[in-house]
Image 1 (tube, rainbow, N blue to C red):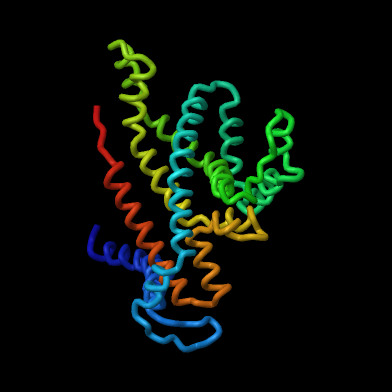
Image 2 (cartoon, rainbow, N blue to C red; image 1 turned 45 degrees about the vertical axis):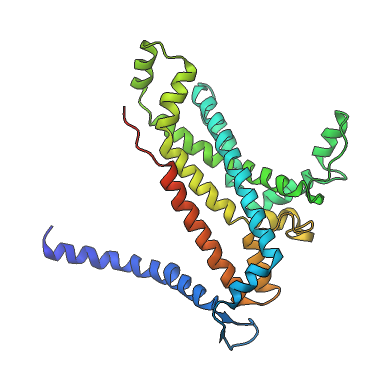
Length: 292
């Protein structure tokens, strides 16, 4: 490549780079600047207050509850969808008939609009006429409040998110399984390795890139959880008793119900720091190079 071609290459790269900086990087700096100011959305004056918004966050019990709930969503949901996704992918890998149809069935919830799926699950969870309680009644078990219970609501929401993301995780693991050379399994079987040894010493290590990707993407999704929480309990968003409140929903309420944009921006910066830290930690701890 000569100098003229290199110059044109940089010119063409400059356009998407400038667009990315304008819609991603610049708003991030604006959010950080806004987090240092006091601004009611109905007014135009943005008074500099330093770290006052962060001090309010530290003293707000609702933010602490939202942070704890978000971590609980992540700790419960990510491992559940990783384990279930890997198990289903391993089973689908062995299916010879209707493989494409079964994969489409598992992937269909991921393509379903989140709002539509949430409203259907709200009906399924209904304590009065929901099919889930109808099933429990048929087998002689008492009806459950699900979304109306502070103890059950968070796990009920998590179950919906796991169900909806499961198809995506299955596809990731299926792609990873297909990338593993069959020669490894053949050589191990010649040495007398059983199914358990094949999984632990070949399948699982060589699936590490897929596992890391699924864990990182899943964690980011749960840390940004919003739509399912809002639509599953539309009359009491974040309830009951803030038991399903997430950081993103907290930001929405502070910004557009209390009109405290500075404090909402501060919560956004905190969430960004959490996502960045957790992602870097996961990449550092989980990523490993496997060679045979």
